[in-house]
Length: 283
Image (cartoon, rainbow, N blue to C red):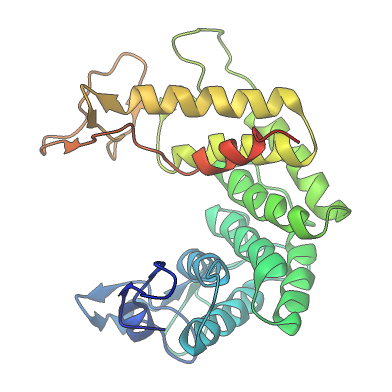
């Protein structure tokens, strides 16, 4: 792993992992930092460890640091699972879990990380451990839309390597039922919720990858339509106007923040757009 920049051999940008490495100890990834100094008093959380696991397992040519971080995050996520499949989220710096296992966002992100690791972790042993953890967590279902969406992203990635993995297929099918349809059919607001909130693009992406994997053409098309809606809703006069902390409803006026909007020479591409382009490839 280089110090960052473009390599002369391949022209591929290699990310700098120094800061992520500083925020990680032998146990896990610290949730908060004061600039480059971890705030140990806040401990660790599965939300962040699972995100780190996704990033490290997506590294196309992981070096020693990426491999070490991936092993650490995988161990943390696996330790958070209970035998029935629910998941704890917060651990104190002394290594004791501070909450009970449940199926909130962190459960969905754990499945996301485990699905990605089962498909793409750098060693066969890590892939096998991640698959075992995925199967345990996939016993559960969450009533929360985003929890199911995050879990579905891991399930879809696992199916790219193990297309007959029934736990992943069942999870995608159940996610489609949770997303559902808008209560009121309104062409100007096709979103499945009354308000945009956080991680909105993940909903579109989950529909796209589920539609591609199952396959389910209706889900795929709906995901692409929601992605198009999100792009239109969060772009104003060539500027990015992201959904603010309080959300955005059908009658809200953009921009949603008081800060200066970001200039977008071309339309922004939230998560899911790449999946949509893959899903639309011929053959």
